[in-house]
Image (tube, rainbow, N blue to C red; front, side):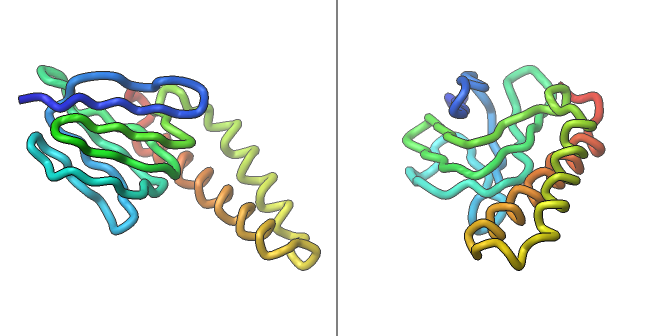
Length: 139
């Protein structure tokens, strides 16, 4: 039996498909979801999402912070970022990394919240770049 899997970002519905399984970066580590999974709501951490559409090869994408709800055989993911390799422009990501590093040079003038935001942005951009470099041709 297939699972219904939907990924929503602030800009769009990224995916709405039947899948055989989903492996996602949860707040306590990687979590696998198969059919008949127990109902849950959990935090999503930035990382690599893997899933398999029936009769196709496994796919992956990089995801950001968010939440995942599993209810019966339906999975709903709400996240601030969900990109496959083809959607990532390496030069833009590299530029964002340099901007974050430059901003962090003035950390003594920042509040703790501002510093934490720049550090989180830097970590997320580095994760996106690493994902792209490991999977340069995947769509």
